[in-house]
Length: 454
Image (cartoon, rainbow, N blue to C red; front, side):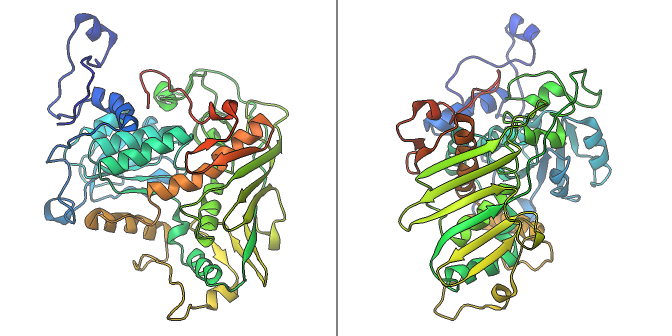
Protein backbone atom coordinates (compact mmCIF):
# COMPACT_ATOMS: atom_id res chain seq x y z
CA UNK A 1 0.00 0.00 0.00
CA UNK A 2 1.23 3.50 -0.84
CA UNK A 3 1.52 5.31 2.46
CA UNK A 4 2.35 8.84 3.58
CA UNK A 5 4.23 9.50 6.82
CA UNK A 6 1.71 12.25 7.63
CA UNK A 7 -1.15 11.31 9.97
CA UNK A 8 -3.40 14.08 8.68
CA UNK A 9 -6.06 13.15 6.15
CA UNK A 10 -6.93 15.43 3.26
CA UNK A 11 -10.72 15.77 3.17
CA UNK A 12 -12.82 16.58 0.18
CA UNK A 13 -14.23 19.75 1.73
CA UNK A 14 -13.76 22.19 4.60
CA UNK A 15 -17.02 20.92 6.08
CA UNK A 16 -15.65 17.38 6.29
CA UNK A 17 -12.44 18.67 7.84
CA UNK A 18 -14.48 20.38 10.58
CA UNK A 19 -16.33 17.17 11.28
CA UNK A 20 -13.01 15.30 11.35
CA UNK A 21 -14.13 12.66 8.91
CA UNK A 22 -11.43 10.78 7.03
CA UNK A 23 -11.68 10.39 3.28
CA UNK A 24 -12.14 6.72 2.43
CA UNK A 25 -11.74 4.98 -0.89
CA UNK A 26 -11.67 1.43 -2.19
CA UNK A 27 -8.37 2.27 -3.83
CA UNK A 28 -5.48 2.24 -1.31
CA UNK A 29 -3.89 5.20 -3.14
CA UNK A 30 -5.69 8.20 -1.66
CA UNK A 31 -5.76 11.76 -2.91
CA UNK A 32 -3.90 12.76 0.24
CA UNK A 33 -1.16 10.29 -0.68
CA UNK A 34 -0.91 11.76 -4.17
CA UNK A 35 -0.59 15.37 -3.01
CA UNK A 36 1.64 14.65 -0.03
CA UNK A 37 3.70 11.92 -1.68
CA UNK A 38 5.55 14.11 -4.18
CA UNK A 39 7.45 15.83 -1.39
CA UNK A 40 8.58 12.42 -0.18
CA UNK A 41 9.86 11.53 -3.65
CA UNK A 42 12.19 14.51 -3.55
CA UNK A 43 13.29 13.45 -0.09
CA UNK A 44 13.97 9.93 -1.37
CA UNK A 45 11.46 8.03 0.77
CA UNK A 46 10.69 4.50 -0.47
CA UNK A 47 7.22 3.37 -1.49
CA UNK A 48 5.70 -0.05 -2.12
CA UNK A 49 3.21 -0.11 -4.98
CA UNK A 50 -0.02 -2.11 -4.89
CA UNK A 51 0.47 -5.40 -6.69
CA UNK A 52 -2.63 -4.91 -8.84
CA UNK A 53 -1.61 -1.54 -10.21
CA UNK A 54 1.27 -2.64 -12.41
CA UNK A 55 2.24 -5.78 -14.23
CA UNK A 56 5.41 -7.75 -14.02
CA UNK A 57 8.34 -6.56 -16.17
CA UNK A 58 7.64 -7.39 -19.79
CA UNK A 59 3.93 -7.97 -19.12
CA UNK A 60 1.90 -4.72 -18.88
CA UNK A 61 -1.42 -6.27 -17.96
CA UNK A 62 -4.04 -8.95 -18.62
CA UNK A 63 -3.91 -10.24 -22.17
CA UNK A 64 -1.00 -7.89 -22.92
CA UNK A 65 -3.44 -4.99 -23.34
CA UNK A 66 -2.54 -1.51 -22.12
CA UNK A 67 -5.43 0.48 -20.65
CA UNK A 68 -5.07 4.26 -20.74
CA UNK A 69 -6.25 7.34 -18.94
CA UNK A 70 -5.89 10.64 -20.78
CA UNK A 71 -5.36 13.88 -18.83
CA UNK A 72 -5.62 17.17 -20.71
CA UNK A 73 -7.36 16.48 -24.02
CA UNK A 74 -7.47 19.84 -25.72
CA UNK A 75 -4.92 20.54 -28.46
CA UNK A 76 -2.09 18.01 -28.73
CA UNK A 77 -3.43 15.99 -25.80
CA UNK A 78 -6.40 14.95 -27.90
CA UNK A 79 -4.15 13.20 -30.41
CA UNK A 80 -2.93 10.75 -27.75
CA UNK A 81 -6.36 9.30 -27.02
CA UNK A 82 -6.59 5.56 -27.74
CA UNK A 83 -10.24 5.07 -28.70
CA UNK A 84 -10.54 1.35 -27.94
CA UNK A 85 -8.42 1.21 -24.74
CA UNK A 86 -9.56 4.35 -22.92
CA UNK A 87 -10.82 3.97 -19.35
CA UNK A 88 -10.83 7.65 -18.35
CA UNK A 89 -10.79 11.15 -19.82
CA UNK A 90 -9.86 14.20 -17.75
CA UNK A 91 -10.05 17.88 -18.61
CA UNK A 92 -11.04 21.04 -16.75
CA UNK A 93 -12.96 22.22 -19.84
CA UNK A 94 -16.27 20.36 -20.12
CA UNK A 95 -16.44 21.08 -23.85
CA UNK A 96 -13.20 19.15 -24.38
CA UNK A 97 -14.58 16.24 -22.38
CA UNK A 98 -17.82 16.13 -24.33
CA UNK A 99 -16.11 16.33 -27.71
CA UNK A 100 -13.52 13.63 -27.06
CA UNK A 101 -15.95 11.31 -25.27
CA UNK A 102 -17.80 10.92 -28.57
CA UNK A 103 -14.67 9.46 -30.20
CA UNK A 104 -13.94 6.62 -27.77
CA UNK A 105 -15.53 3.23 -27.28
CA UNK A 106 -17.42 2.24 -24.16
CA UNK A 107 -18.22 4.53 -21.24
CA UNK A 108 -14.96 5.92 -19.84
CA UNK A 109 -14.81 7.91 -16.64
CA UNK A 110 -15.22 11.63 -17.41
CA UNK A 111 -13.73 13.92 -14.77
CA UNK A 112 -12.17 17.30 -14.11
CA UNK A 113 -9.92 15.88 -11.36
CA UNK A 114 -6.85 13.99 -12.57
CA UNK A 115 -6.56 12.25 -9.20
CA UNK A 116 -9.69 10.25 -10.01
CA UNK A 117 -7.88 8.89 -13.07
CA UNK A 118 -4.88 7.87 -10.98
CA UNK A 119 -7.16 6.16 -8.44
CA UNK A 120 -8.28 3.65 -11.06
CA UNK A 121 -6.65 0.25 -10.65
CA UNK A 122 -7.55 -0.81 -14.18
CA UNK A 123 -5.44 1.95 -15.79
CA UNK A 124 -1.87 1.01 -16.72
CA UNK A 125 -0.66 4.27 -18.29
CA UNK A 126 -1.62 7.91 -18.65
CA UNK A 127 -0.97 10.66 -21.15
CA UNK A 128 -0.59 14.26 -19.98
CA UNK A 129 -1.49 16.99 -22.46
CA UNK A 130 -2.13 19.86 -20.06
CA UNK A 131 -0.51 23.32 -20.02
CA UNK A 132 3.12 23.28 -18.88
CA UNK A 133 2.54 24.20 -15.24
CA UNK A 134 0.70 20.91 -14.63
CA UNK A 135 3.20 18.51 -16.24
CA UNK A 136 5.48 17.85 -13.28
CA UNK A 137 3.02 17.35 -10.46
CA UNK A 138 0.79 15.10 -12.55
CA UNK A 139 3.72 13.01 -13.76
CA UNK A 140 5.09 12.60 -10.22
CA UNK A 141 1.70 11.56 -8.85
CA UNK A 142 1.13 9.18 -11.78
CA UNK A 143 4.46 7.46 -11.13
CA UNK A 144 3.59 7.10 -7.45
CA UNK A 145 0.25 5.58 -8.44
CA UNK A 146 2.04 2.96 -10.54
CA UNK A 147 1.19 4.40 -13.95
CA UNK A 148 3.55 4.72 -16.89
CA UNK A 149 3.50 8.21 -18.37
CA UNK A 150 3.59 9.99 -21.72
CA UNK A 151 3.87 13.70 -20.91
CA UNK A 152 3.85 16.45 -23.48
CA UNK A 153 6.85 18.71 -23.80
CA UNK A 154 8.28 20.73 -22.21
CA UNK A 155 9.18 18.37 -19.41
CA UNK A 156 8.68 20.92 -16.64
CA UNK A 157 8.79 24.62 -15.68
CA UNK A 158 11.51 24.59 -13.03
CA UNK A 159 14.66 22.68 -12.12
CA UNK A 160 13.06 21.44 -8.90
CA UNK A 161 10.15 19.99 -10.88
CA UNK A 162 12.49 18.16 -13.24
CA UNK A 163 14.43 16.64 -10.36
CA UNK A 164 11.19 15.45 -8.75
CA UNK A 165 10.04 13.86 -12.02
CA UNK A 166 13.30 11.98 -12.51
CA UNK A 167 13.26 10.77 -8.90
CA UNK A 168 9.64 9.63 -9.13
CA UNK A 169 10.22 7.70 -12.37
CA UNK A 170 13.34 6.00 -11.08
CA UNK A 171 12.11 5.15 -7.59
CA UNK A 172 8.80 3.79 -8.83
CA UNK A 173 10.34 2.10 -11.88
CA UNK A 174 8.01 3.83 -14.33
CA UNK A 175 8.39 4.27 -18.08
CA UNK A 176 8.13 8.02 -18.75
CA UNK A 177 8.31 9.38 -22.29
CA UNK A 178 8.47 13.13 -23.00
CA UNK A 179 6.63 14.21 -26.15
CA UNK A 180 9.58 15.71 -27.99
CA UNK A 181 9.00 13.55 -31.05
CA UNK A 182 12.06 14.72 -32.96
CA UNK A 183 13.78 11.71 -31.40
CA UNK A 184 11.40 9.55 -33.45
CA UNK A 185 11.58 11.56 -36.67
CA UNK A 186 13.50 9.80 -39.49
CA UNK A 187 14.77 13.15 -40.85
CA UNK A 188 16.17 14.21 -37.47
CA UNK A 189 17.68 10.73 -37.23
CA UNK A 190 19.34 11.18 -40.63
CA UNK A 191 20.80 14.52 -39.51
CA UNK A 192 22.01 13.00 -36.25
CA UNK A 193 23.85 10.15 -37.98
CA UNK A 194 25.34 12.56 -40.55
CA UNK A 195 26.73 14.90 -37.89
CA UNK A 196 27.87 12.27 -35.38
CA UNK A 197 29.73 10.42 -38.11
CA UNK A 198 31.82 13.53 -38.76
CA UNK A 199 30.40 14.47 -42.16
CA UNK A 200 30.64 18.21 -41.45
CA UNK A 201 33.72 17.91 -39.27
CA UNK A 202 34.02 19.12 -35.70
CA UNK A 203 30.96 21.21 -34.85
CA UNK A 204 31.83 24.39 -32.99
CA UNK A 205 28.53 26.26 -33.20
CA UNK A 206 24.86 25.34 -33.40
CA UNK A 207 22.79 28.32 -34.56
CA UNK A 208 19.10 28.04 -33.66
CA UNK A 209 16.49 30.50 -34.91
CA UNK A 210 12.78 31.00 -34.43
CA UNK A 211 10.13 33.60 -35.24
CA UNK A 212 9.30 36.11 -32.50
CA UNK A 213 7.10 35.44 -29.50
CA UNK A 214 3.63 36.89 -29.72
CA UNK A 215 3.20 40.41 -28.34
CA UNK A 216 0.18 41.97 -26.70
CA UNK A 217 -2.18 40.29 -24.29
CA UNK A 218 -5.02 42.79 -24.19
CA UNK A 219 -7.78 40.59 -22.83
CA UNK A 220 -9.78 41.77 -19.84
CA UNK A 221 -10.36 40.17 -16.45
CA UNK A 222 -13.82 38.64 -16.23
CA UNK A 223 -15.71 35.61 -15.04
CA UNK A 224 -14.48 32.41 -16.71
CA UNK A 225 -16.79 30.67 -19.20
CA UNK A 226 -19.18 28.16 -17.65
CA UNK A 227 -17.44 25.19 -19.28
CA UNK A 228 -14.04 26.01 -17.70
CA UNK A 229 -13.09 25.27 -14.08
CA UNK A 230 -10.61 28.14 -13.74
CA UNK A 231 -9.38 27.19 -10.27
CA UNK A 232 -8.49 23.69 -11.45
CA UNK A 233 -6.93 25.11 -14.63
CA UNK A 234 -4.60 27.21 -12.44
CA UNK A 235 -3.85 24.27 -10.16
CA UNK A 236 -0.43 24.73 -8.53
CA UNK A 237 0.25 28.07 -10.25
CA UNK A 238 -0.25 31.44 -8.60
CA UNK A 239 -3.85 32.56 -8.59
CA UNK A 240 -4.90 35.28 -10.99
CA UNK A 241 -8.28 36.39 -12.32
CA UNK A 242 -9.49 34.72 -15.48
CA UNK A 243 -8.42 36.38 -18.72
CA UNK A 244 -8.82 34.71 -22.10
CA UNK A 245 -5.29 35.87 -22.96
CA UNK A 246 -3.96 33.58 -20.20
CA UNK A 247 -5.86 30.39 -20.92
CA UNK A 248 -5.56 27.55 -23.41
CA UNK A 249 -3.01 28.31 -26.16
CA UNK A 250 -2.11 31.75 -24.76
CA UNK A 251 -0.57 30.37 -21.58
CA UNK A 252 2.71 30.18 -23.53
CA UNK A 253 3.24 33.93 -23.26
CA UNK A 254 3.30 34.09 -19.44
CA UNK A 255 6.27 32.95 -17.37
CA UNK A 256 3.96 31.56 -14.66
CA UNK A 257 2.51 29.03 -17.10
CA UNK A 258 4.70 28.82 -20.20
CA UNK A 259 7.99 30.42 -21.14
CA UNK A 260 7.75 31.59 -24.73
CA UNK A 261 8.73 29.74 -27.88
CA UNK A 262 12.13 28.87 -26.41
CA UNK A 263 10.46 26.43 -24.01
CA UNK A 264 7.67 25.45 -26.41
CA UNK A 265 8.94 24.69 -29.91
CA UNK A 266 12.42 25.36 -28.60
CA UNK A 267 12.13 22.17 -26.59
CA UNK A 268 11.87 20.30 -29.93
CA UNK A 269 14.76 21.94 -31.75
CA UNK A 270 17.02 21.90 -28.67
CA UNK A 271 16.23 18.21 -28.18
CA UNK A 272 17.40 17.44 -31.72
CA UNK A 273 20.48 19.62 -31.21
CA UNK A 274 21.54 17.83 -28.02
CA UNK A 275 20.98 14.51 -29.82
CA UNK A 276 23.07 15.53 -32.81
CA UNK A 277 25.83 16.85 -30.55
CA UNK A 278 25.87 13.68 -28.42
CA UNK A 279 25.26 15.87 -25.37
CA UNK A 280 22.40 14.01 -23.70
CA UNK A 281 24.38 13.53 -20.49
CA UNK A 282 26.10 16.90 -20.59
CA UNK A 283 25.10 20.48 -19.99
CA UNK A 284 26.30 24.04 -20.54
CA UNK A 285 28.74 25.88 -18.31
CA UNK A 286 27.18 29.29 -18.86
CA UNK A 287 24.15 31.05 -20.29
CA UNK A 288 23.52 34.64 -21.32
CA UNK A 289 20.16 35.90 -22.58
CA UNK A 290 18.81 39.25 -23.66
CA UNK A 291 15.55 40.30 -25.26
CA UNK A 292 12.99 42.98 -25.99
CA UNK A 293 10.14 42.95 -23.51
CA UNK A 294 6.50 43.13 -24.49
CA UNK A 295 5.71 46.89 -24.41
CA UNK A 296 2.03 46.50 -23.54
CA UNK A 297 -0.41 43.89 -22.32
CA UNK A 298 -0.08 41.16 -19.70
CA UNK A 299 2.27 38.78 -21.54
CA UNK A 300 5.71 38.86 -19.91
CA UNK A 301 7.90 36.71 -22.17
CA UNK A 302 10.23 38.75 -24.41
CA UNK A 303 9.11 39.47 -27.96
CA UNK A 304 12.63 39.00 -29.35
CA UNK A 305 15.32 36.95 -27.61
CA UNK A 306 18.99 36.14 -28.03
CA UNK A 307 20.67 33.41 -25.99
CA UNK A 308 24.16 31.92 -25.88
CA UNK A 309 25.04 28.68 -24.09
CA UNK A 310 28.71 27.65 -23.75
CA UNK A 311 29.76 24.00 -23.48
CA UNK A 312 33.13 22.52 -22.50
CA UNK A 313 34.94 19.23 -23.17
CA UNK A 314 34.37 19.40 -26.08
CA UNK A 315 34.14 23.15 -26.53
CA UNK A 316 31.21 24.45 -28.57
CA UNK A 317 28.45 27.03 -28.35
CA UNK A 318 24.76 27.04 -29.11
CA UNK A 319 22.78 30.21 -29.76
CA UNK A 320 19.07 30.96 -29.93
CA UNK A 321 17.94 33.98 -31.93
CA UNK A 322 14.43 35.35 -32.42
CA UNK A 323 13.79 36.03 -35.24
CA UNK A 324 17.29 35.01 -36.40
CA UNK A 325 18.53 34.18 -39.88
CA UNK A 326 15.56 32.01 -40.94
CA UNK A 327 17.64 30.23 -43.58
CA UNK A 328 15.78 29.30 -46.77
CA UNK A 329 12.78 31.20 -45.31
CA UNK A 330 12.30 28.43 -42.72
CA UNK A 331 10.43 29.74 -39.67
CA UNK A 332 12.45 27.75 -37.14
CA UNK A 333 15.34 25.34 -37.14
CA UNK A 334 19.08 25.03 -36.59
CA UNK A 335 22.25 25.34 -38.64
CA UNK A 336 25.20 23.21 -37.56
CA UNK A 337 28.57 24.81 -38.29
CA UNK A 338 31.42 22.31 -38.62
CA UNK A 339 35.03 22.95 -39.56
CA UNK A 340 34.42 21.28 -42.96
CA UNK A 341 30.78 21.91 -43.82
CA UNK A 342 27.38 22.96 -42.46
CA UNK A 343 23.98 21.29 -42.16
CA UNK A 344 20.52 22.81 -41.80
CA UNK A 345 17.83 20.96 -39.86
CA UNK A 346 14.40 22.60 -40.04
CA UNK A 347 11.92 22.38 -37.20
CA UNK A 348 12.48 19.65 -34.65
CA UNK A 349 9.14 17.97 -34.07
CA UNK A 350 7.02 15.74 -36.30
CA UNK A 351 7.62 18.07 -39.25
CA UNK A 352 11.42 18.08 -38.98
CA UNK A 353 13.44 18.00 -42.22
CA UNK A 354 17.06 18.26 -43.32
CA UNK A 355 19.26 18.64 -46.41
CA UNK A 356 19.53 16.01 -49.13
CA UNK A 357 23.18 15.25 -48.35
CA UNK A 358 22.13 13.99 -44.91
CA UNK A 359 19.13 12.10 -46.30
CA UNK A 360 21.34 10.23 -48.77
CA UNK A 361 23.98 9.32 -46.19
CA UNK A 362 24.26 5.90 -44.57
CA UNK A 363 26.98 5.25 -42.00
CA UNK A 364 29.50 2.48 -42.71
CA UNK A 365 29.33 -0.78 -40.82
CA UNK A 366 31.92 0.44 -38.33
CA UNK A 367 30.35 3.91 -38.08
CA UNK A 368 28.01 5.32 -35.47
CA UNK A 369 24.51 3.88 -35.81
CA UNK A 370 21.90 5.80 -33.86
CA UNK A 371 18.79 3.98 -32.65
CA UNK A 372 15.45 4.75 -34.31
CA UNK A 373 12.35 2.84 -33.26
CA UNK A 374 11.62 0.36 -36.09
CA UNK A 375 7.85 0.89 -35.92
CA UNK A 376 6.78 1.69 -39.49
CA UNK A 377 4.57 4.75 -39.90
CA UNK A 378 4.60 8.04 -41.78
CA UNK A 379 3.71 9.86 -38.57
CA UNK A 380 6.73 10.53 -36.30
CA UNK A 381 4.43 11.39 -33.39
CA UNK A 382 2.76 7.99 -33.62
CA UNK A 383 6.19 6.34 -33.86
CA UNK A 384 7.13 8.22 -30.68
CA UNK A 385 4.01 6.98 -28.87
CA UNK A 386 4.61 3.46 -30.14
CA UNK A 387 8.14 3.54 -28.75
CA UNK A 388 6.62 4.36 -25.35
CA UNK A 389 4.10 1.54 -25.65
CA UNK A 390 6.83 -0.93 -26.60
CA UNK A 391 8.86 0.15 -23.59
CA UNK A 392 5.87 -0.31 -21.29
CA UNK A 393 5.98 -3.97 -22.29
CA UNK A 394 9.77 -4.37 -22.29
CA UNK A 395 10.42 -2.02 -19.31
CA UNK A 396 13.28 -0.43 -21.26
CA UNK A 397 14.03 3.30 -21.41
CA UNK A 398 12.11 5.14 -24.16
CA UNK A 399 13.94 7.29 -26.70
CA UNK A 400 13.00 10.52 -24.89
CA UNK A 401 13.01 9.39 -21.28
CA UNK A 402 12.32 11.86 -18.50
CA UNK A 403 16.05 11.99 -17.75
CA UNK A 404 16.81 13.10 -21.31
CA UNK A 405 13.82 15.42 -21.36
CA UNK A 406 14.98 17.12 -18.18
CA UNK A 407 18.49 17.60 -19.55
CA UNK A 408 17.05 19.35 -22.62
CA UNK A 409 14.55 21.60 -20.82
CA UNK A 410 17.28 22.90 -18.52
CA UNK A 411 18.48 25.01 -21.48
CA UNK A 412 15.34 27.18 -21.86
CA UNK A 413 14.75 27.30 -18.10
CA UNK A 414 18.13 28.84 -17.32
CA UNK A 415 17.92 31.06 -20.41
CA UNK A 416 14.67 32.58 -19.15
CA UNK A 417 16.24 33.15 -15.73
CA UNK A 418 19.22 34.90 -17.35
CA UNK A 419 16.83 37.09 -19.34
CA UNK A 420 14.81 37.99 -16.24
CA UNK A 421 17.91 38.88 -14.22
CA UNK A 422 19.63 40.64 -17.12
CA UNK A 423 23.04 39.04 -16.70
CA UNK A 424 25.27 36.14 -17.74
CA UNK A 425 25.13 33.16 -15.39
CA UNK A 426 27.55 30.30 -14.74
CA UNK A 427 25.93 26.86 -14.51
CA UNK A 428 26.96 23.68 -12.70
CA UNK A 429 25.38 20.92 -14.79
CA UNK A 430 26.20 18.24 -12.21
CA UNK A 431 24.64 19.98 -9.21
CA UNK A 432 21.96 21.75 -11.28
CA UNK A 433 22.72 25.09 -9.67
CA UNK A 434 24.13 28.44 -10.66
CA UNK A 435 27.64 29.15 -9.48
CA UNK A 436 28.05 32.11 -7.15
CA UNK A 437 24.57 33.58 -7.69
CA UNK A 438 22.05 32.86 -4.94
CA UNK A 439 19.45 35.21 -6.42
CA UNK A 440 19.43 33.10 -9.56
CA UNK A 441 19.33 29.89 -7.52
CA UNK A 442 16.16 31.04 -5.78
CA UNK A 443 14.49 30.99 -9.18
CA UNK A 444 15.19 27.27 -9.72
CA UNK A 445 12.02 26.43 -7.79
CA UNK A 446 8.64 28.10 -7.55
CA UNK A 447 6.23 27.68 -4.64
CA UNK A 448 3.01 25.88 -5.41
CA UNK A 449 -0.44 27.18 -4.52
CA UNK A 450 -2.06 25.17 -1.72
CA UNK A 451 -3.06 22.38 -1.49
CA UNK A 452 -0.55 21.37 -4.16
CA UNK A 453 3.14 21.09 -3.39
CA UNK A 454 6.18 19.22 -4.61
